[in-house]
Length: 103
Image (cartoon, rainbow, N blue to C red; front, top):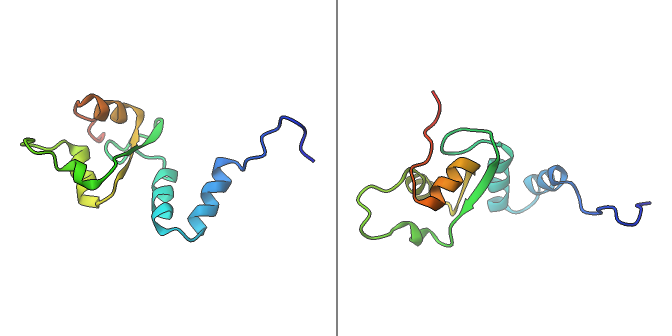
Protein backbone atom coordinates (compact mmCIF):
# COMPACT_ATOMS: atom_id res chain seq x y z
CA UNK A 1 0.00 0.00 0.00
CA UNK A 2 1.22 3.51 -0.79
CA UNK A 3 2.00 5.83 2.07
CA UNK A 4 0.27 9.17 2.40
CA UNK A 5 2.07 11.81 0.35
CA UNK A 6 3.62 9.40 -2.17
CA UNK A 7 3.15 10.17 -5.84
CA UNK A 8 0.59 7.73 -7.28
CA UNK A 9 1.10 8.79 -10.90
CA UNK A 10 2.88 6.38 -13.26
CA UNK A 11 6.50 7.11 -14.08
CA UNK A 12 7.13 8.95 -17.38
CA UNK A 13 8.85 5.92 -18.95
CA UNK A 14 5.94 3.57 -18.24
CA UNK A 15 3.38 6.11 -19.49
CA UNK A 16 5.38 6.68 -22.68
CA UNK A 17 5.68 2.92 -23.30
CA UNK A 18 1.93 2.55 -22.82
CA UNK A 19 1.12 5.21 -25.39
CA UNK A 20 3.69 3.94 -27.88
CA UNK A 21 1.89 0.59 -27.80
CA UNK A 22 -1.55 2.24 -27.52
CA UNK A 23 -4.07 3.41 -30.09
CA UNK A 24 -3.20 7.03 -30.91
CA UNK A 25 -0.92 7.12 -34.01
CA UNK A 26 -0.16 10.86 -33.86
CA UNK A 27 0.70 10.59 -30.18
CA UNK A 28 2.77 7.46 -30.89
CA UNK A 29 4.86 9.29 -33.43
CA UNK A 30 5.47 12.24 -31.11
CA UNK A 31 6.38 9.96 -28.21
CA UNK A 32 8.78 7.93 -30.35
CA UNK A 33 10.48 11.14 -31.45
CA UNK A 34 10.64 12.38 -27.86
CA UNK A 35 11.95 9.06 -26.52
CA UNK A 36 14.74 9.20 -29.12
CA UNK A 37 16.09 12.01 -26.88
CA UNK A 38 17.73 13.84 -29.79
CA UNK A 39 17.31 17.38 -31.08
CA UNK A 40 15.86 17.22 -34.59
CA UNK A 41 17.87 20.30 -35.59
CA UNK A 42 21.37 19.88 -34.13
CA UNK A 43 21.27 16.23 -32.98
CA UNK A 44 22.20 17.18 -29.38
CA UNK A 45 20.94 14.95 -26.56
CA UNK A 46 21.11 17.71 -23.94
CA UNK A 47 17.80 18.81 -22.33
CA UNK A 48 15.41 17.75 -25.09
CA UNK A 49 12.12 19.70 -25.23
CA UNK A 50 9.13 20.01 -27.58
CA UNK A 51 8.52 23.17 -29.61
CA UNK A 52 4.88 23.50 -30.66
CA UNK A 53 2.99 25.88 -32.93
CA UNK A 54 -0.78 26.40 -33.00
CA UNK A 55 -1.26 25.65 -36.68
CA UNK A 56 0.87 24.90 -39.73
CA UNK A 57 -0.43 28.03 -41.45
CA UNK A 58 1.52 30.06 -38.85
CA UNK A 59 4.71 28.93 -40.62
CA UNK A 60 3.75 30.88 -43.75
CA UNK A 61 4.52 34.41 -42.58
CA UNK A 62 4.59 36.86 -45.46
CA UNK A 63 7.75 38.87 -45.99
CA UNK A 64 10.27 36.24 -44.89
CA UNK A 65 12.71 35.80 -47.78
CA UNK A 66 14.65 32.91 -46.25
CA UNK A 67 12.79 30.86 -43.67
CA UNK A 68 14.74 29.63 -40.62
CA UNK A 69 15.82 25.98 -40.52
CA UNK A 70 13.24 25.04 -37.88
CA UNK A 71 10.39 26.44 -40.04
CA UNK A 72 11.61 24.51 -43.10
CA UNK A 73 11.88 21.28 -41.08
CA UNK A 74 8.38 21.62 -39.58
CA UNK A 75 6.84 22.54 -42.96
CA UNK A 76 8.56 19.62 -44.74
CA UNK A 77 7.33 17.16 -42.11
CA UNK A 78 3.89 18.78 -41.92
CA UNK A 79 4.04 18.59 -38.14
CA UNK A 80 3.17 21.19 -35.50
CA UNK A 81 5.80 19.80 -33.13
CA UNK A 82 9.57 19.72 -33.23
CA UNK A 83 11.83 17.95 -30.74
CA UNK A 84 14.66 20.35 -29.91
CA UNK A 85 17.39 20.80 -27.31
CA UNK A 86 17.11 23.66 -24.83
CA UNK A 87 19.60 25.84 -26.74
CA UNK A 88 17.75 25.47 -30.07
CA UNK A 89 14.40 26.08 -28.34
CA UNK A 90 15.69 29.32 -26.82
CA UNK A 91 17.06 30.39 -30.22
CA UNK A 92 13.69 29.69 -31.90
CA UNK A 93 11.82 31.89 -29.42
CA UNK A 94 14.48 34.62 -29.62
CA UNK A 95 14.32 34.65 -33.43
CA UNK A 96 17.99 33.71 -33.70
CA UNK A 97 19.61 30.99 -35.84
CA UNK A 98 19.56 27.53 -34.28
CA UNK A 99 22.66 25.41 -33.77
CA UNK A 100 23.86 23.37 -36.71
CA UNK A 101 24.39 19.59 -36.49
CA UNK A 102 27.83 18.64 -35.18
CA UNK A 103 30.16 17.03 -37.66
